[in-house]
Amino acid sequence: KKLLNLAQEIPISNKGETLEDNLTPSQRNLLAIQILKIVVYGDPFSEDYNPHITRNRKSNQIALFLQEPNISLRQTLLRLIRVFEVLKFLPNEALYYNSPKSLASDMKKRIKIFDQISLAIDAFEEYQRRVVDTQYPKTVSCILDDNGEAVFALRMIMDQMRLNRNMKFILIPRGGHYREDASYTDIEDILNQPYFSNLQDYRKKGRLYLVKSEALNYGVDLSMVSKEVADALLGSDIILSIGQINFEMLNGIKKDVFHLFVVNSDEIITVTG
Image 1 (cartoon, rainbow, N blue to C red):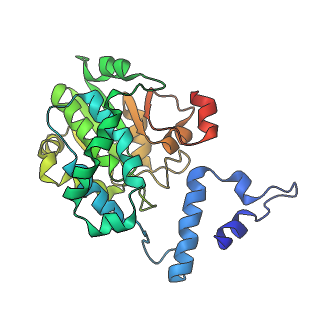
Image 2 (image 1 turned 180 degrees about the vertical axis):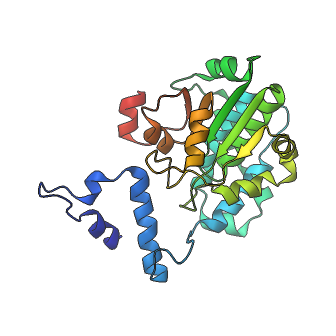
């Protein structure tokens, strides 16, 4: 923590500006991860270090056990919002010493709490009309966020593709293992689960595509994305963005974007209300 603070206080101009004054949220988190690598390995580039890797794997297993048949698209969306908050505050002791199935059983009531809530800004019906119920072919780029909720995101995508055979989805994962972030390998692991056999079929038929070069950095920093990600964003009809940090990083993009996130900062409240 001291190293991170020292790094952020490095002056970068004669006007007293520091590195911290010019970092985006994604760049700040990347800096923290690189400093952790220096402390643990002595080299910020030698290892793919992520202290959350076991937690992420178990979070995805729990989320798979939380899937229920015959729920509406809106219910899946609301549970997607809720599940990360529930998993985030699950103590390590409970996570490591209990089976995913038993933990999922204990969580079901807490996940369902969101089934009846009202969204502060609710564009679900517009999304349903313009994207899911339309007769015209639509390509949606979905920018994914964290493990655990990624399972619900893929469930929501699978249900949409089942309802509309003209839909195509491009999945854009995180660019590496930064805390709970769902990277390319995480999404591949989830897609290979038997529960997502329909998505595997859609992928073989060309209706589902997983970007391999990923959205570089912690969050989608448009100044750093790969050509593959840029082409996916520019070539899609709609962008579905999951997570608050993606809302921050995509602000101002000249595309139709539907955002899905829980507000977690005063700065974002000033924008969303």
